Length: 259
Image (cartoon, rainbow, N blue to C red):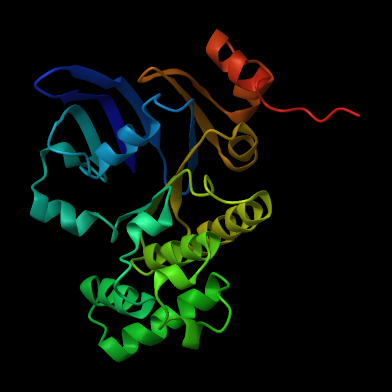
């Protein structure tokens, strides 16, 4: 389904050059969940944003990103608009940065649904309400007419998940989807994503610094350090018998409860 081959990303400016991703490769099969872990600045988000060509103009991307047999690196912006959302959905770390503060949730969800389907505005509104109900927004028929600032951060993340699901993607990339949330809300969001992934039969790339979350939910794990994948395998392999020193350091850093 998705094949990344020697993906390389550099950022250029007048003063400097930053080599953010250094020739990484991996495969993702249909229905599979891949976890990408590593410390901040290891290249996790940059590598995933490059899949959808969402990096700024200062980025220089090389390598191959095959999606269903097509190399997205070579695709035009017009072609990428047909891939983004409709085929590959992306959930960002901060939902408030992805929601427009001057438009209601209804306005943004209806526009998204109409853009990717033949639904009328009335049909799109009903679908949006159903999706908000699915992600457990209370009283969705009323609350859909509220603005993003009227929701908590956790509720905004639920709205972003609903908006992404409205496009019915085959692959969902979740970039630290619970990074800004409290522990209880994190658990609720992760369980929600688990159930929706199963219901919609999606593949998923879960980017996280939380090794426990990745170990519990992923079929395969890629460990990134300084722009490279230093180790890759099943959760049992990675957490049971890590081979790389950096992986061992990450595992040792997991807080342990002692009494």
